[in-house]
Amino acid sequence: MSNLISNMLTPEFFFSIFRISAPILYATLGAIVVEKAGFANIGLEGLMMFSALFGSLASYYSGSWLVGLITALLVGVGMSLLMCFFAFQLKTDIILVGIAINMMGSGGTLFLCKVITGITEGKSMASTTGLINSNLCIPNISIPLIRDIPFIGRIISGHSLLTYLAFIITVLTSIMLYRTSLGLNIRAVGENSDAAASVGVSVLKIKYIALAFSGLMSGFGGAFMSMGYAQGWSQDMVAGRGFIALAAQAMGAGECLGGCLSSLVFGFAQALGIKFSSIGLDSNLASPIPYAVTILGLVAFGLIRLHKAKKPRLNETETVK
Image (tube, rainbow, N blue to C red):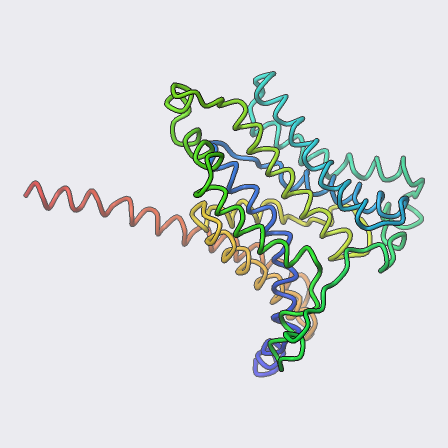
């Protein structure tokens, strides 16, 4: 135990928490905005998988990480707009659309990888890992002055550009939701779409914008996975982060700050699982740690909400007496 604690109290461990939390945070922000608009996007996992694949491929074939990033964002937004078409134009249940996207994200990306690259299962498990070198990955940023601060500098400085951008976008998303007319419209549609429509708000347009935003965030998350977290794409590399983001959104009470803190909690859980594996714990015991934390977090969140829901009733009962 003392060995584990000493390994945890290192700059590298805290550095890994922020690194692991970034893709979860992107997906969480997408889930928050969609939830504010009054529905849910459970297709985050699939959107991230498609964005990760096409981002890494575009980076490789163009020789530019920036082209790869832009491609990942366009794929994320494009796939989310496709979801909008099926859900809002063809009146398909949004949950079923999300399930379909997730299934396509697992099997469809594997098929597309084989078709585009010609890499077969026997060669490298249908993975583009190895095609992407460090020059084609999103660059790391070394922050002057901060990097020279003992201990803290090694935690904060040296992250991928997208890690810093994730926390900046968190602030910008909160400002957008509570300080702009677009954010007001999104929240109005989520609270009462009929009332919003009665004052001239285009409910369909707002839903398109909200889902497109979640696709954009999924694009960032997917690009980070294949061009930052790893050098290339591999099957199911997102590894449940889209679903964890839905849990982070719920635990964070649908707010950007809460979602950010929840993402860091899940990042800590995953980093802890990796640390357990590194000190010799069976990987079969270490790998479920993030998912166990997800379940425990949702149970705690449910109990808190249940307690808050009971409070007004108790107050009403006391008032009547």
